[in-house]
Length: 155
Image 1 (spheres, helix red, strand yellow):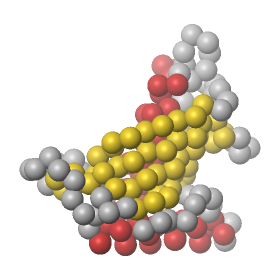
Image 2: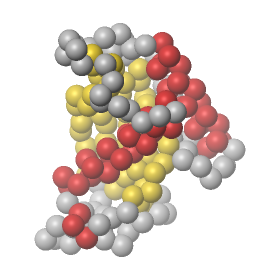
Image 3: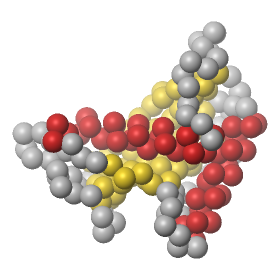
Image 4: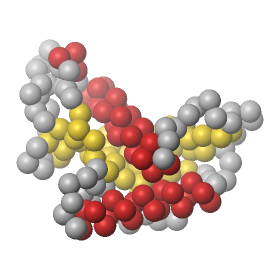
């Protein structure tokens, strides 16, 4: 599983003293963007004629997160379908407690037509290779943006 540290900002905190639930979507965005930057070897560019766009999100808030907590967003692709990818994400605090569980679906999108298109084989291969790399590094106990957790990628 790919991991990215998140710096909690003072503006992320609500009147109750913890990270506001709406802010977690920003944290998940950071994880998704960094995941694809590393998996594809370049950032996603929404100016490209063909790209991925976010079409669904869901989150379960399990425990509050506070200003001085150290957290990471853990991201993996759990399913690749004909025109989309399903991602699993977690906000995890130092020590391993899961604060938020999230899932998202990104669809292919052709900017010229506004329609989805079949997932290019090149994208499938890059995602599968990246997931395998993350899993291997996690099994070897290496410190890297991985943890070896998550589900097997379904094609």
